[in-house]
Image (cartoon, rainbow, N blue to C red):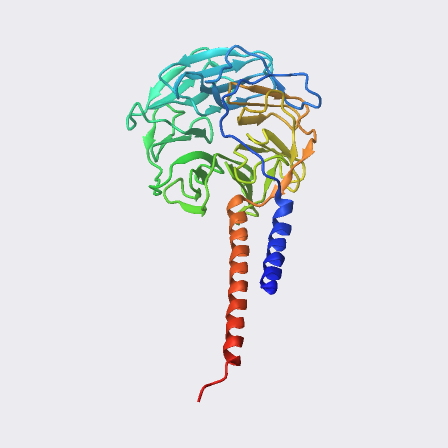
Length: 396
């Protein structure tokens, strides 16, 4: 039995040595409902919180987009349920925000800024658009969709050609959005498009809930290029991109394949819960930002080798849903509780985050260690019994 104890201790030590550097157990909640306490004067803050009239416990601002350093838009919901679509606009770099549209029967998830006057946003059963920078917004229904169909995305390749998606179907326009026709195929019945990225008018990428997909013929045929989906992806070029999900960070490199990467985690982050990443944006091969919950905004200056937490003013309970950088220093972000953030020091380095293996792989490693212990003990017991049996003299 002493030998068994020794074997068990050795294997347990091996597991602990392997798991130890991967982080400590903490807690992280996907959505928190305790009241935030804002403090815009926190020391070392990189992202300042902007006060405005539309924050509440019900407000979920899902997307933010700027056309230049002064003009930007936010879309999301600010109702007591999942409806209550809201569009906000700023013309002074995010210092003040004004209401452009509120529709209590709609939910807005994504905004596409084509130029300073032309914008599209997703709705239910159709799209909203403006040709005058949001002074007036118009609703355009898509005949093939019911009024309950929530459109997930709208993306334009240029000012005439674009795609939108809902209910596992893709619709295309060739005349600037005045008509939308079902055309590009979508053969993945178990998945739905969440975001598109056009390389050209014929080559397009799509991230869904359960995979990343690629078409080189305008959506006539698709190939699944990665078996994990997520919230968003960001392309540096046609040969390099990044993607995030609640508990995933993936990298597409050299135009070949998507690869899972270890996750940048806060030292106090949970070993069980994911970090709840929501958005990612790379300006070039080196500089990128991730938005989420555990670490609200993280920054890398060396292509994802190291990630640094950038301090955000606020309570820390808000999940950052979207961010946009007009250049490497000036950017904006938004999320739950109607939080709006702004930075003019976007390359600041904060606390270096830990790099951890995703929990699924972690559990498989731990399970392998347990199996190794069981096999070792089983082998020892089998050998011991065999030796004892060999010592028993035969009875003639």
